[in-house]
Length: 185
Image (tube, rainbow, N blue to C red; front, top):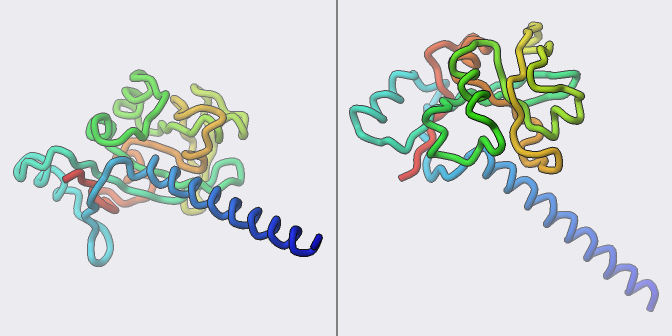
């Protein structure tokens, strides 16, 4: 009887663990993709960034946002660096919880700035206003952390750094390129 009880307990524990991991992944993806219903991606390679203003202005698809992604290392930890257009993001996705307008303005006006999730910044001992050394494709780069997103208990954004799209294009040496355009149709 004890063996059956133990077996059931193990199965239930594994199932709960899987459900928790799946929910955490789903929440992380929702933080990144927001309310997007569609994505425009290139069949091969990257999109030319001139497609974005054509869609938004000439085609009238206002609920659109350009995105470029890359990998960076901060204090030995891997991060996904998301390059976003903060102006297009404001009504589009709830990606920037807890970020003040001042931090968003700094992303737009100053190169070499980024926003970290508060949980990551707290774990790494990084404060807004601090300059940090990170690695991009093996190259050392200095950037200023101008703000944090989320709260220290919310790990949905953990491992995702945010910067203005032009900054990320420069860092990744991919000027004029996008990875995707997110849409709400």
